[in-house]
Image (cartoon, rainbow, N blue to C red):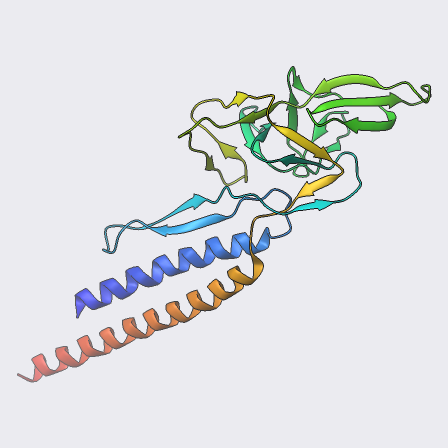
Length: 235
């Protein structure tokens, strides 16, 4: 009975962790370029546990008409400077210009170009080419005057290269990804999250039922143990 109690407690704990992962995915169903987490069991005993991996499948592309909304067309990643100044990777393309005139994503992370952070001076028109080239017309500039100010750093993985995701939602690699001219982008569009809301809601219901069953097993095991203890005392 102690074994049953231990196994039920282990299952309830792992189900609770899976619920947290699923809830986090649902909370980011509308976050551009978000990559959902996968809750995977690494075994079936109380000494093993649940681990989260990332689903790198592509989300649906949505047309927005905003020239600073940029989606990667096919494989590849944007290069991002994280809060600590390190390199990370992302498919999030809801770009904007911060108060210091640097290009950032919607989470406030600086987007890197081939020469580092991209400075965006005041403009009346801006354009992002399919190869990531950023051109703009300065305020007061001539109608035909477009000035190239930088190019997005676009990278992709090599065969067998694995990416992991950190709590800030950015992707990491132990080895820097290589820049590739094969990575193309679409301006005026955003790649959505790859979270399937209906699937996640079904998972939420299934996990809730599983957790309830495991709690009932724990209660039953505890009741049986108490009953046995009472019998042993009588003897």
